[in-house]
Length: 496
Ligand SMILES: Nc1ncnc2c1ncn2[C@@H]1O[C@H](COP(=O)(O)OP(=O)(O)OP(=O)(O)O)[C@@H](O)[C@H]1O
Ligand SMILES: [Mg+2]
Image 1 (cartoon, rainbow, N blue to C red):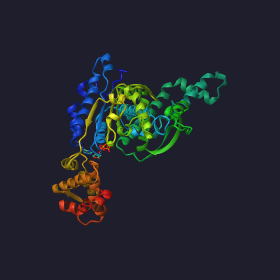
Image 2 (image 1 turned 90 degrees about the horizontal axis):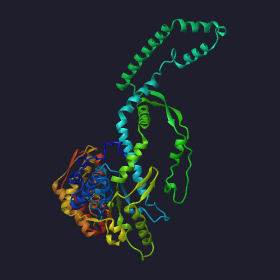
Image 3 (image 1 turned 90 degrees about the vertical axis):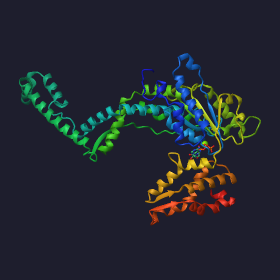
Image 4 (image 1 turned 45 degrees about the vertical axis):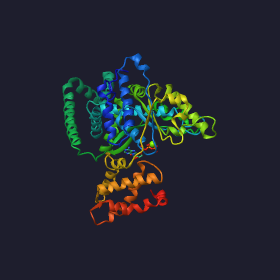
């Protein structure tokens, strides 16, 4: 396994992001919540540290799973989402509430590990595809040229070779006059024959190079050519069973795909498209799937991260009636995966001992202490995310890379409208959002979305018809558009 040197798994600590760097990256998108950022950053760094340990020590270090606690809309899921893009580790985000006890309607919990394994395989595969890309494109060019100008076979091609063999097998007496002549030419003047073929070969090569140049210059992109596309015919069998075939994870397509003969199908496509199809085929031939799979499984086992969102929705213990029974059931189902067990995936066995779990939940009704004790013990780190205040809202509106202010400005710009939002307008929006959160319900930064949508309601509708090319949104405009609604609690309950 060690022979497979992948570019993206950090082999030394220096290759991995430091906690400080991780926090810096998260800061670009998420305002505040320093504690939570810090915890996930440390947890991530610990994965890299563990990789540096001696074998027997490495097995002993269990991941320090995290629970993020915070009311709705304060950035829990957002942290997970950004983290996923940041780390090159296999990362999956699942809603805990999606799982129900085995036997009930719903997905069984092991499917999260299977999904993670699929994801890792695709990830490693596309990394490999990137590595072999150049080679694949080279081979693709040759194949395109073969289709454009098939190699000559007249003189030294298989046909004439066969004929020659046939003639040579006969006795002198049996030969016809023509054959006698052919043999004579071949026997007494071999140089001439090969000269012709060499000449032709040369001419062919010249033409081929000319076409290669035109191909590279992009002059042939739209020219349609006929290519053979391998096309596995798959009998379309769908099996419907209560739990689906997911549980056994038998993939009929995969199974039959390798047994059935590959069928070639002719397709007529422009060169630009043909190149893509062929390059994909060539890349697949160059990639060693066994290596990909063992690397992927290694990554899942050692650096995989599962983000268990909405864990509070499965908190709640025995003795209660109805759905709670099932909730505890889900916790019991999840437990072995978090404690470390082996899950069968279609790529092979995956051990879950060192997968990092980050759980999150609002914990409005339930508390982390409502989780079954065994599960609580597997999440030693708890971080609380703070409620957002007016000052946070101001920053959230303007600072993140994808800040709402920037989004609305960019969207209206496509209509030829230059929007400027003044500072006091931002102050006003933040103040109103905070006010509504206080008076109606605290939905965190999500409130900004509803407020902004209402604020831009008219502009969004009218933008294409406006004569002006620029417009300034100031505090007065905000007040005009929103204050009536905000003042009336009943109305804002519905609109904001
Ligand atoms: N601290 C923050 N900084 C920047 N944006 C934020 C912050 N908190 C929330 N947001 C924005 O608010 C929206 C909702 O946030 P998110 O999905 O993270 O909420 P959550 O904490 O997961 O809530 P829930 O408990 O309801 O799932 C997102 O669009 C996110 O970008
Ligand atoms: Mg969420």
